[in-house]
Image (cartoon, rainbow, N blue to C red; front, side, top):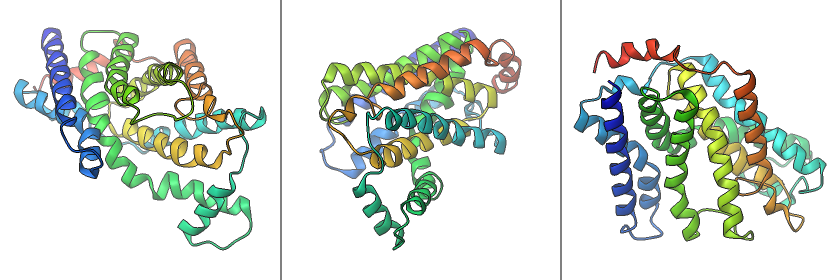
Length: 289
């Protein structure tokens, strides 16, 4: 069983690399290209399952409101912690008048109460707008946490599973960052790569944990989608740049990666880490393959 899982991981990486390379031949500026790129991990996972005879039940389709709520609350929590630190220390200012103006227009609100606008925008972005984000996040998560994490957990412990899945996740993003199609605009490239790498590797602990503890892909999908919404569409845009804010805010600033690292270290010290206890639960799934 372990050899089968290792073989599947290697085949997945080959498909992932081939599809990613092929995507560069799609004309730039196409919305279809962006959608296809986001869904490359999912396509690679499905192709791997097809050629190796892996049951799609191994993806983990169970649904639990408790774990779905956890997937939503975790990024909201570290988002408030991260940007609370940024605002309190003066590394960035709040609110951004442009954000308030656009929020009023988008939601059709004429109220002059900024708190009401901010609160409404938060729930609009993280709940109402969650559905389209889920579609995009699912394209990645089917590959990373639906396929890769459960397969790695067949022959490695939790920490190595989190690390290896994080390295694959990071490696898939790096070409876009280096090419300048994904990242910040004002900070040096090496700084962006360092911050984003730390964020991905620390975040992989959280993602692997919620996938294996819940035995489901859905909490990871919700976590990913909520992160994209709350960090990229809410906190980044409500924060006013005071000159050097890009060095601290967002996925390519240093504060969010450090907060994620602290959370990962807390998981290491105090969390109920999935380990051998996960395998009997997973064996039922793999026995059907």
